Amino acid sequence: MGRLFGTDGVRGVANADLTAELALGLSVAAAHVLAEAGTFEGHRPVAVVGRDPRASGEFLEAAVVAGLASAGVDVLLVGVLPTPAVAYLTGALGADLGVMLSASHNAMPDNGIKFFARGGHKLADELEDRIEGVYEEHRTGAPWDRPTGAGVGRVRGYDEGLDQYVAHLLGVLPNRLDGLKVVLDEAHGAAARVSPEAFTQAGAEIITIGASPDGLNINDGCGSTHLDLLKAAVVEHGADLGIAHDGDADRCLAVDHTGAEVDGDQILAVIALAMRERSALRSDTVVATVMSNLGFKLAMEREGVSLIQTAVGDRYVLEEMKEHNYALGGEQSGHVIILDHATTGDGTLTGLLLAARIAQTGRTLQDLASVMERLPQVLINVPDVDRSRVNSSAELAAAVTEAERELGSTGRVLLRPSGTEPLVRVMVEAADIDHARSVAGRLADAVKSALG
Image 1 (tube, rainbow, N blue to C red):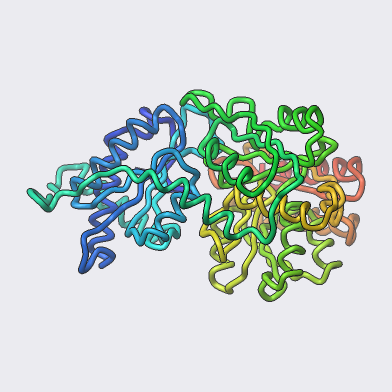
Image 2 (cartoon, rainbow, N blue to C red; image 1 turned 180 degrees about the vertical axis):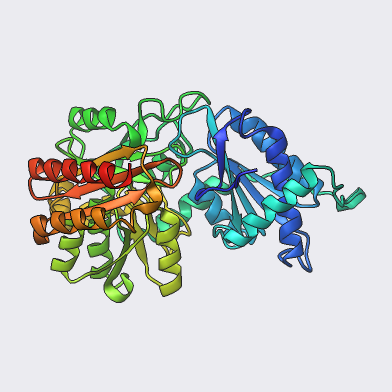
């Protein structure tokens, strides 16, 4: 069996890859592994369980709850809430475990299971590996040690979760949003109630789209992966900005008053400078991945903010932040982590802080985002090559060196082997899009020649 846990939990097509049996078995295994690790010692264990609105989340939630309760874990069902809300409530309620059912920005047929440890933090890799091992051991016949009588877990709804999370978000805001008009695209997802409530209570006038989830329409032509509807709505309503979430609302992209997209790098730049102004940007440092636009790096250098870059994936950003106690990190895709107030990317919090900066300064989002110039970026996938030799091919190294010499300080080259497919991703940034395309094309040919 291949590893079930990816970088963001267990994910697959619901009822095909991710079955009720798998959800139940993993939940029982998680309870046993955490018990063995001493997490439940001295008290009756409690888990917080939430989900996004996907239809499959209904039966998967039932399976997870059955697994946890059968292993002696009491369950608080918080219903449809964003991933960062479940993480927050896991910590705020002193729960031993959090479980979120979502496939984030994926299409509706997919779903996923993500476990949070006490405090709302992602489970350590070694615990995930142990859960997989215990699950597989019992899937093939080893009996579980099951409690009976009063030892079984109890299940109850926790309807206060939404209000508690919204209050947390509002408590983080440095100022109100009075006078702002904001269009919110909720992707028919987990933030459909939370985000409008938070923005309204913060004082903004809101227009919502993609806020009518029916279990089948999540991410369907809307949200952070489909910005056209949001761009049109912002211009139509004369709004100050638009905010787009994905299905589980752990990311945020934006649109300025002209309908132009503002990506995660630009959002990160705006929030970094706002946090530094109020002495909240520890060590004057922000963490991002190697895929961040070169324009972001140049802007941070110009503004005197240090940039730490990690491998691609918000988990690596978070690891770096936790290890060195940095306050802010994120990705171009819109995952922004404000570690003093969230243990994971929080799209609603990010959108609120972006709007707060506009309200505080009286400047437009277009003006604020202009702190960085987004350099043209070309990405080419080169398939059917030996990705394992990217870093060892002398021929390829020579081609990269020549490309970097040609681009100088105003461009950048990045070659990344895919983690799952026999392909290499060639990324080139340059001041001119035609120059970027030319260099990227030559490097793609070099990859084929050296690794094909």
